[in-house]
Length: 318
Picture 1 (cartoon, helix red, strand yellow):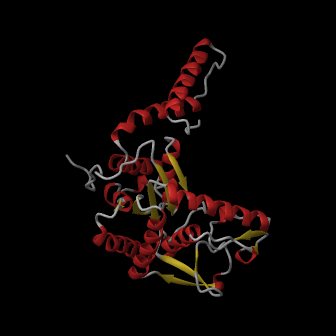
Picture 2 (cartoon, helix red, strand yellow):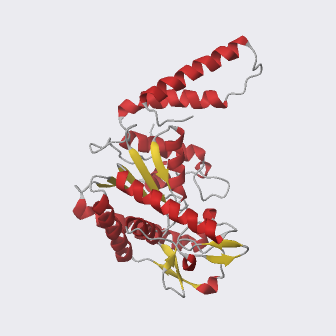
Picture 3 (cartoon, rainbow, N blue to C red):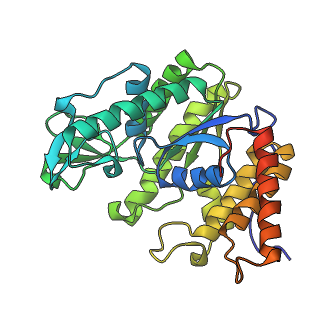
């Protein structure tokens, strides 16, 4: 008996991810979820150096600024609610010192530029097509930072707007890194604050725009991974959501990660992933008798496993 519909997913024949790969993940909070899996299994990656970026225009701004060597200055920061903010970055970068904020922004921008140049795979996750344009600049912001809504105009990006944004991003990336594989995905997180119908319209614009971009570029190292479709079609049950009924829960994240792993991670990496999983679980183990002989033996074996992994891949740290 078959109890669910499944999204057809085959192993990619293109440049697969292994432990020599180097990823850059940008976008919505779902990029964070996948990034956490890369982190757990100790793949080389950088995720959201400017924090969560919900819409394509915010990601485009980061990519463009990084590639063109922008330097953040005093005029790019503003003070609100006892902290310094920047409209290009998530609130996690906020600080009580303007100099510290600018230093962090410029450091993270340099890190992003290097990763755009070096990455073998770039994963771009779009969360919403709704943007807030700041009155003074008439530019979309990455985050409103709880500034009064009177300072912004809310706008739904059209499909053409998003296609143009994607095209600009990819063209700029290709200027510095023509060989990188670019994977697009749409976050399954529902943005209900925009409204139920508005959220559906937003996701539809994102999906349509990505596929409209991909259609004439089927062989140009750009691909789509159906995170959104897996959540809606294979996990059609609220038991796969957190208590807010909007975000996928750990079980759903793990399920989608396994689908991504099947499609994009080389099969030969599985043995090392299993070893790293054993090490990670061992590091979290809390013994009843920490001074016992059996636990000391367990620690010795754990250390041998760590040394074995690090002898193959020195960049891996536990």
